[in-house]
Image (tube, rainbow, N blue to C red):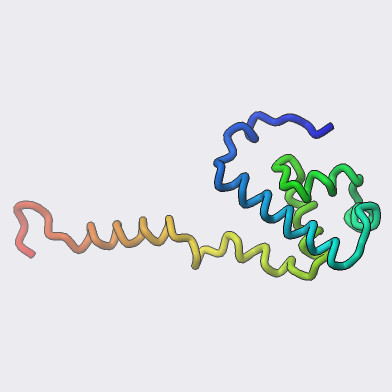
Length: 111
């Protein structure tokens, strides 16, 4: 039985859906390769139940197991791109706001 963790209760719905989609994609990749659960579990060094949880998008499955599964399907190179600073829209918006505030004249000062 999977371990319960309090942080799973606070997982945003969008993140849960994304994990479920990732798990479904990994399951499809395994099935397209006609590999049984046992074979993938052995190659990943985990139990069959962990692979089943991974394929359901369980947030309790370790990041390393997801990374290894991506490696098995030849997609591990996509992992670092997930947090690429060049694609961080939140940080970009902060930078834009800061730049805009620096370019505004302050009260009582001529531009």
